[in-house]
Image 1 (cartoon, helix red, strand yellow):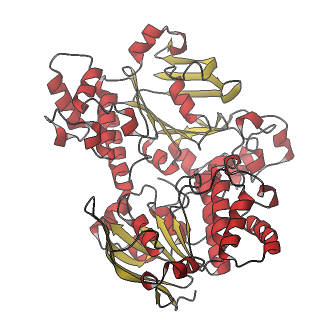
Image 2 (image 1 turned 120 degrees about the vertical axis):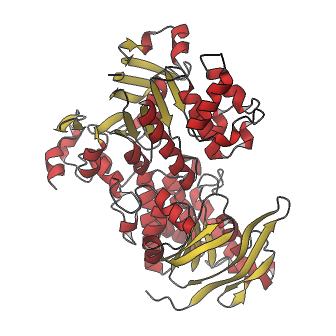
Image 3 (image 1 turned 90 degrees about the vertical axis):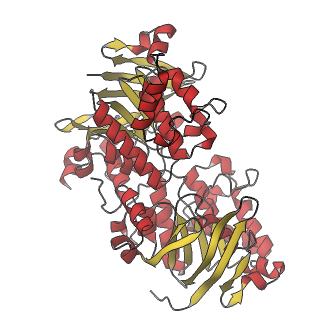
Length: 315
Length: 261
C-alpha cells in the first residue's frame, strides 16, 4: 500500500468539510474522487501534504500514511522534502500555477533533484510530455504557450522528481475537449510507463471513469460509494451515484428529460439529520433519518453508504 | 414537430476584429426554423459567442444580413432593435456575472416589464411570481439577493428574466457550463420543458457534444470562425463527414454510450 488515508477530518473555522474520509492507493494505481463543488474533494487532495493554510483550516484528526510514515506528524522540514518531490500536484489552471516571470526551463530546472546535466533531463521530460516543440527554446515564458502546452509543462514538473504519488485536481477542466483528450491520453500513458500512482480529483464522471481504476464518490464531506470503476459504472449502489450517472448528457439521451437529482447539496453549516443525501434521494425511507449510514459492503471491494443497497441493486 | 416557418435567416454574416486581425465569424449563413433547437458546437475562441452577439446586435457586424421574420435586423434603427429584443433573448453562461448583485430577484424581473412596457404596473408583481414558479423558484425568492442564491438558482432566475418579455427566440450561450452536473441536468430539463411547452426556438451554444446531443435537433460545427459541418444531430453524430467533427467526437469521452466504459 502506497498511501493510506484513515479517518481524515478537516474543518475550516469550526465547520467540518471533510468528515471522516478513508482512501487507499496502491502503487501504479489511479484512484479517482468524483464530487460536486464544495463536497470537500479538493480539501482531501490538499490535506495529503498538509497544504491547507493553517489560519484557514485545520486537520482535526486522521492519519495519512505514505509508505507507512504518517505525513501529518512530520515537521515542516521533512514535509518540504515530500511536497513536490514524493508527492506532486497538478491543478486546474496551469497558468496560475506557473510563475509568469520565469521561463519554463527555469521553472522545471528548479524541481530537478539532480542538478547535474539539467539540460538533457529537461529534454527527456519534454519528450515524455509531448513538448518536443519547445526543446532548446530556453527563453519561452508560460504566456507564450497554449493552455494545453502549459498543462503539459505542469505535468513535466510534477513527474520530474519521480514522485511516488501525483495528485491531479481537475487537470483538464479548463481545457477544450480535444486538448483535454490529449492530456488524458498523456496521463494514462505516463501512468503505464512510469507505474505512477495517481489521485485524480474531478467533478466530471466521464473523465474519471475513463482514467481511474478505482473510484470514490464524495458527498457532503464523506465518501458515499467506493469501488473498482467497472462495478461503479455497471452496478452503482448509492442513490447519489445513480443520479450522477443519470445526469450525464449523451447521445442516447436525445430530447428526453434527465432523471435528475432534485434540490441542491446541503451547506456544511446546516447538514440534514441522518443520511446527508436524504433530502434529494429518490429511494429514501423514514429509517434513513435515524443515523448517518456507515459504508456497507455491496460486493468485493465495493462499498456504499446507504441502508437500501439490497433494494437499489435489485431494481 | 412543425418546422416550416423560417424564423431567422442569417446570410453571409461577417465579423473581423481589426485590432487583432481575427476573423471571428467568416461568412456565416444558416437558418433557424420556428420551434427548432439548433446547436452550435465548437471549442473556445471559434467564434460561437461572437455569432450570438452579432445576431442580437450587441456588437456590429461588418457585413451580411440577419432576417428575423423577413425583416433585416441590421437595417432597422436602434429603437426598433430594442423593440425586437423582446422577441430575441439570450441566456448567458455565468449567472454570477449576469445578475446585478445589488438588485433583488423580484426587481431584476420586474425591471424587464418596466423597460418593455408589455405588462401594466399592477400586474407586474403577479407576473413576476408566476415566472419564478415557472422556473422552479417561487414567491419566496422575490426579495432575495443574487448572492443568497446557489449557481443553479441564479441560472433559474436568469431564465425567468429572459422569459419575462415572452420571447420567441432564445440564444442559450453555454447556459449550464458553470454548473455542477446534478444541477446541470435540472437546468437542461427546465430548458427542454420550456421549449416544448412554449414552442420556443433556441440557438443552443455549447462546447459539450453530450449536451448538444441531448437537447438539439440540428447542429452546426464551428471552427476558427467557419462552419465545418451542419446537419441533423443523428446524421452528424453517427456519420460525421468532416475530420474536425470526427476529432471532436472521438475526444468527447463517454459521449456515445450512457454509461462510461
